[in-house]
Length: 197
Image 1 (spheres, rainbow, N blue to C red):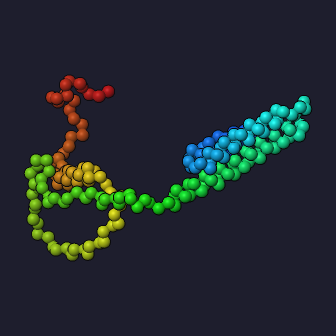
Image 2 (tube, rainbow, N blue to C red):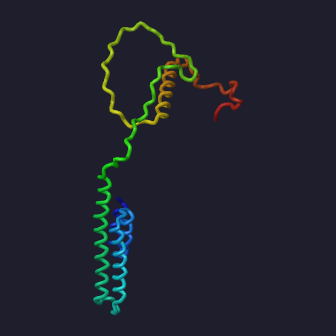
């Protein structure tokens, strides 16, 4: 969008002298022969208008040649701006509305990793199931599955499953009874650093 505004204003801000830059951008983007021909016409007209201004014999360049050349450069710049906006908007609207090519293959379904039964992770023994006498709780009715979101790559799913297993294992471990908030600075293993200052 910013480039469109820049190239649309280029011929106006340069009083028509840089209209060829706008037409060059349009010809490169659309790749239509018509736009290449209009680029050439724009260049020829700009050179002709400047030559007409230079051919004015009056000292202040206010003769008919200077006035016609100046008017021609400004009108050419204005028409270049208008044509650029119309053609560029139509080009990008046509690309957005274009149907997908029939020869392009359909996207395959996203990869879903196979579901394996629960097993011990990384050599840890399986968690002991403790059977307590509990009152039966009513099972809630199954909720409908949420709409599928963006597919995650298989590696991310594997890492997520491993992190879930690890967090469940850490939840089942009992915490230490009395952690010591102030460790003894003279205790072995502190390499004689002493208390912090």
